[in-house]
Image (cartoon, rainbow, N blue to C red; front, top):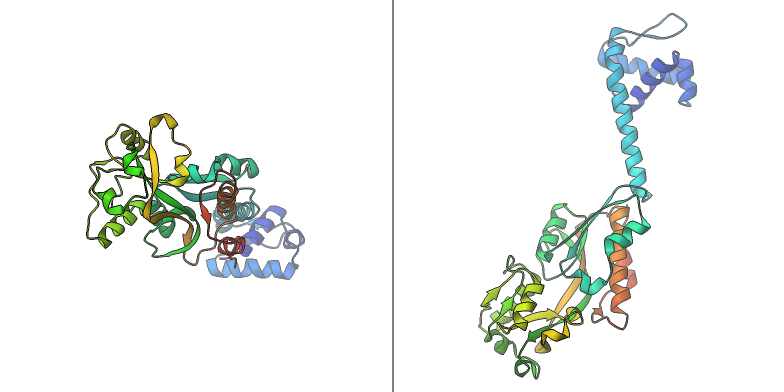
Length: 322
């Protein structure tokens, strides 16, 4: 039973003749008759009483009629949904953002996208980069902008930009010169992303750096949000680590001072998508808008990140098509 057969059956039942159905569907009358005949053979039952001027449904035809209508209508709705998605007149864009994306984009991405594509639904998820990577790999999200390192199984990754990570302290003495990482570890530490002590990209870098010198990262205070960590550092409870992009947002009255590490550490921002996947037009445009916003801000006077990817690399990553 094919959709074409059901369409021919419905048209013949509504118009009353195979000839009228053929004209409506732009087919020949023998072709319509053949579609109905093969459908009847499959169902092992006649669908029309033949012989009179107008076709009349048999009992079997009456039983098939509502199901045929539902199938043809569902197919039409599915076709319309796909066409709307492809033309950005509908569908849903799903995209993940690193939790501190505002520091790098300096724009309301959802508002900006919605103004350009008012008929496209948005699912914009801001969370820890390790969760974004997992959601993209599993298909919950189509793509994302996150920080590295992450577990990359099942993912394609394109590094976009990098921003230096700084030591932040309320003590001027501890940030008077480039900070030795060993000295940083020996200080009371206030670290954020407490829910992701081993998978958060910044925490992973700290753990790896500590391992190289035979030390461990042992924070005295762990909190979930960067804003909470900043408040604690300002109150003198310890030192933390901040991306350079966030420093300009610090309230100068807090008295927090920053300094690079002797051996630089970086936030590397990257686009990710599932291996082998083709992004929907809606998600592709949302990802492009995120990258454009990142580039626009970071190339301006207040940008702090070094751009790593070329425009051609970004376009190739986003625009792979069938």
